[in-house]
Length: 472
Image (tube, rainbow, N blue to C red; front, side, top):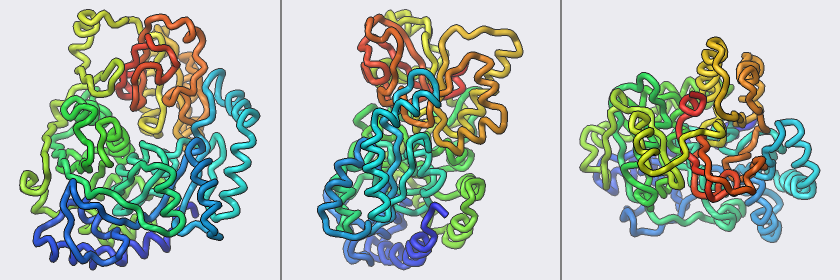
């Protein structure tokens, strides 16, 4: 069993008391973010109230996740702490040091040959100190965490900015530096300025070509890359309940691009379904037992203006597919306006590559939705106008899409299937011809698109959109 059931039981057994004490102290109903923060104080039971955006507070996170690029220094530092075992469940994931070039098997072997010393070091240190180790090819850290470790109402930190992805399962999950992670591994407190709160009320239901990705692309357009700084973004409303769990993860993941401390959703049926589908029925049963603590109070959502520092409302029924970019993730354009905007700005309109994957959009749902469009194209004899690459988010995703014929569908279109790793999203892409620095356009389902991010070419115009729009 990958997840720590005893730890989750302990968190849930204390949660109700701590939340009730916090309500008593603050004299008001609480948002989900406040419930998780007040129930994870390092001192245990709340004894004071905190001022949003001002008070520095010590917290006790439930878990830690590290990726292979940032884990090296963190583990070297932890080895000096004189501890025989990590104080908090911790995992290390090898996903950053694998370059996408030829295809999954060859690229993975090249990475193992090149970074063998690093992988061996992380493996042996993890083994010594009771840390879970996910070897190269096992998957992207945040997709693996969502499938195995994230749980509603928990708090985790990770040495990667997109740790926030776990908000899709109702956590407060925050990306931190290695030194912060080491403190918690050694049993010390983690300090954070008590965040401000931004509420996003979702109404209606997605229709047509719109997807969960379009929610965060729209929010990025409203808040800009700095608008979420120092704040937790909490999504709520009927529209939130209509989104899938991995869709919620996508929205939380890209909260990093608006500068938010993290983003989260209240526990609901889509999360319960996801927990059961990923062999965590025990966690779903436990969560069902304390449901009222795993979402914000009704009064908060009935009058959000009173309880959040800022409130945004989005009607999913009228939300259009968006394409954001180039060079910044907050330049939001509905697809219907894209041609005119591209011509006015002299952006290259020929798309040279379409890429699906990264921790943002590499789930089974993402791959299957894109594949259905590819399948229709193949059936109509349409030949691709651009090169196409995918990175499955985890071995679980890759195995399942292979079993269900989805990889075969992609391959009919000449798609390159890369390793279950970050790949082009973090610049680990040996793109042929990138060194010529020619002006060109690529479209991807990743989260970041600043100049040189994917292929090192400052003239590559990278646009962010949903997997189904990339496929189209």
